[in-house]
Image 1 (cartoon, protein in one colour):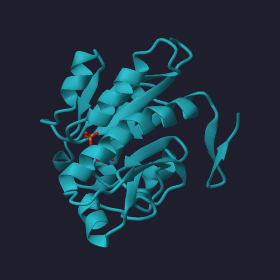
Image 2 (cartoon, rainbow, N blue to C red):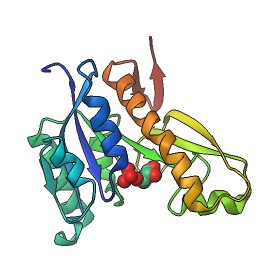
Image 3 (cartoon, helix red, strand yellow):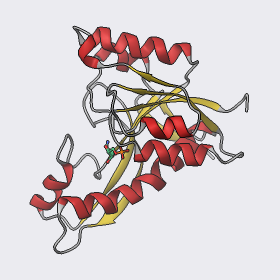
Image 4 (cartoon, rainbow, N blue to C red):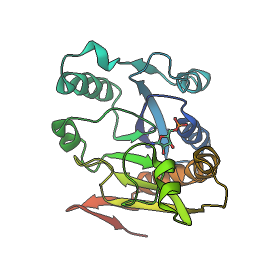
Length: 204
Ligand code: GRF
């Protein structure tokens, strides 16, 4: 267990991606383990997944901080206390300060429910349906200061079907997310993927 990559997961809500990561980490051979879950929302459903798995959780409500920098400093302190080597954002709904992102550059990843660079931001599935595209999906990427724009680690395609609503499409994409995120984490934890000079480098 000692040589597993120590991961911190940031959430704000339901936490189904957190659950997928917890389930993957439950496998003895998986090369990462979640050492802390941090939520900015006290009532986030995902906190129950951490509790059930016996993973320490910290609640850091953004409203208690007067600046983005102070909020991020509290998160940073918690991550350091837990000895975190990689941060996984999983439905974390706050934008970080540039300083925090720079500090964790190459050591912080996110999952987004579209095929980036298309359809950044929020209300993603509404955007996808309004655009009339036939293929959507999800993306795991390194976090950089510009929202949803960091170097792409991996993607998974999902069809957009006739009659899809944002809800039906979201559910189909979410199923793909739950496979993609643990796979990306595994690759990073095995040292097969890293960020070098702003590019994703894959070996082995
Ligand atoms: C996911 O669709 C993820 O791609 C996006 O926010 C959603 C979080 O869902 N960033 P959950 O909290 O992991 O269930």
